[in-house]
Image (cartoon, rainbow, N blue to C red):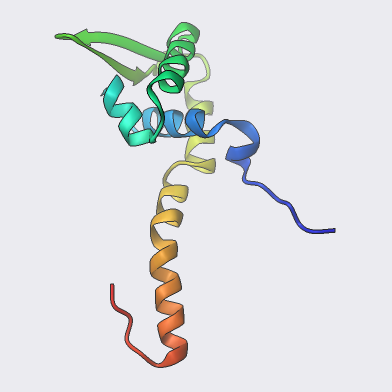
Length: 121
C-alpha cells in the first residue's frame, strides 16, 4: 500500500482557512485589510470573504474600520486564542513558510553538490 500521508494542516483546515489563519494568528499584533489578506493568502475574494465572515462571527477575529477599509486582526480575547495560535505555529505557521521557501534552494544545492558545481542562487 502506498504511503498517502497528508500534513496536519491539510487534515484540519482547507487551504484558504490555513492561509488566512496563518496570516492572522501568525501575526496577532498586526491588522490586515481584506484585499491584503486575499492577496497574501492567494485566495479568491469570495472564499476569503466567507472565511473572514466566519472568523469574525465566531469572535476569533476582530474587525475595525479605518477609513473605507475593514481591518481584521486575531482576537487575543478569544477563549481559544492561545491554543489556535499554537496550532497555527506548529502546523502551518513559520515552519511551512520556511519549508516552502527553502525547498527549491535545497534541491539546487544538493544537485550541484553531487555534480561538483557551485550552486547559483
